[in-house]
Image (cartoon, rainbow, N blue to C red; front, side, top):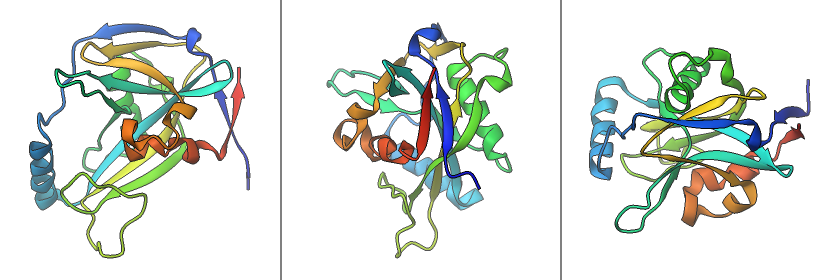
Length: 202
């Protein structure tokens, strides 16, 4: 059994960036998001969603690629990982590749651009509300959503095609660590989750 996971990281400068048509959230408000979750749960049960954790390095420091939305007129800035919902019966690996390519690639981007290496974390939403936990709370017998984070290995070079309404930023792990206020608990926990990997800086 391998006790050490080696992951190659390439410098941010290896990659090029273009834009494509905007991609908007399915739900325009928090209320509509949880209303749709409730409707989906009543029809199909537990929602399965996935996030892609895409890494590069700068000066031998790991950076996570995040989508930045905002700042809004109220000054709010929102960060998220490339993420989406799995289709009924869809394989997790194929789902991650489809979702990451839909957000950061194009139709002609080779499928092997996004190599899913390992599971990073599991998060559970016990109710139709924003709270998520990296475990199923003891009082919860029927969680409403299971979010699974996967480490995505990039090739040495590629081009990202970023929706115009987002900005793709490379956030260093030290910026995310213990920073739930700025990035939310899922992203802020990534430095701890990723500590089990041994990164090779190329």
